[in-house]
Amino acid sequence: TGVCTFDPGYFSTGSCESSITFIDGGKGILLYRGYDVADLADQGDFVDATHLLLLGELPSAAEKTAFAREITRHTMVHEQLIQFYKGFLHGAHPMALMVGVVGALAAFYPGAANVRDAQERLSACIRLIAKMPTLAAIAYKTSIGQPLVYPRNDLSYAANFLHMMFAVPTERYEVDPVLERAMEVILILHMDHEQNASTSTVRTAGSSQANPFACIASGISCLWGPQHGGANEAVLRMLEEIGSPDNIPSALARAKDKGDAFRLMGFGHRVYKNYDPRAKIMRSVCHDVLDHLDIKNDALLDVAVRLEEEALKDEYFLKRNLFPNVDFYSGIVLRAMGIPVSMFTVLFAVARTVGWVAQWKEMSEEPVTRISRPRQAYHGHMHRLFPTVEQRS
Ligand code: CMC
Image (cartoon, rainbow, N blue to C red; front, side, top):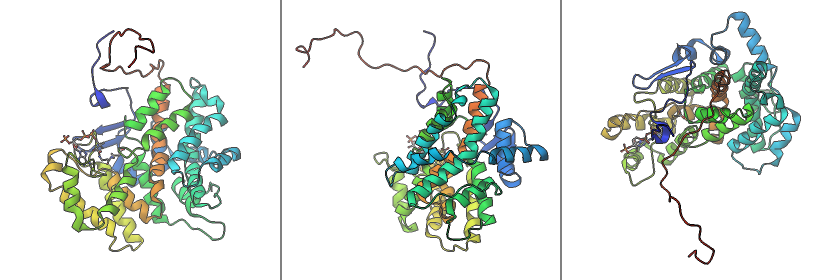
């Protein structure tokens, strides 16, 4: 019944109203509640950006202190949840662990299922933001067989994450302020991106009024794929595979060959048909981090810079508006910081949780939430007579 538009991949379907994030893909603009993401990355910090996305405005000094305290109050996870990690096979991808443990949080906070209660909603959002770095770091520590490191609430969100990832009981660990700042910028740049696949997934799950922890677990599942959050991992693997600038022409030829499934990872975007504004910032963070760590002649960076130059001279990429996206440089920065490749998408999930919960909260605050229910173009049989077993060939 009713008129139905066929729009596979939702190229031209607006699925909701939102006041959180604005993108002009043609001009390469990204705004969080009206503020340019470049200004937030340059002049703001994690708490500013999170308060802004979740609660609508930048915080005053007093609000900022209170909000930061509220997040740090929830950084621990229930000891029983930590047992979950022991049930996974050694070597399992940390994203698989994240899907499981974040969904399992629903069992620890059953009150969150009361999505019509404003206080429960906010608590679930704060808990998710606060616990994600802890859960991510435990996934990493489990994967390398080291004891988990508890959060330190005297550190910033970014510094605490680095601390939980890299501290070991036998040595003193000081967070490098340049890496802390780089991590903060990475988190801010990845926080929200309007109705991308994982955010739409969270909204779709939330439209049935499911428990918010389960909704965020569905977002993590969607983010995992190489066409979305898995791209930063895929970029690094691709750069390693290309190995040397000499191999760039053959990589470009493969990317252009329609018979070959190979694509230039970190290139192209559904919405940006101009340079991704986040990629510009990430490119400069990448150079800052490598300079600071005195990493000279980084072979992968060399391949990345040359690949970008060559692709942007190529008719194929220009005609299709295929520019580097945020993931093109983020993998090189993360690798230089010592983050293992398998954790790249997990880190993206930590950052994107802020956007997911902000979008989920916005949707749940609407007086009436309509369940997401797309239709389809049916190509199967119509009314067939039911055959007996003997009649079936
Ligand atoms: N390498 C080679 N060709 C490409 C690429 C690429 N990376 N991206 C798109 N194309 C071609 C594609 O083959 C098609 O060509 P034609 O018109 O001749 O058939 C044309 O460009 C349009 O591609 P599309 O797949 O219709 O575009 P889309 O908007 O559906 O896909 C995308 C966007 C991001 C999935 C795609 O560009 C891609 O696969 N990029 C590589 C993966 C990647 O970097 N993903 C991260 C996205 S940014 C992070 C995030 O927001 O999650």
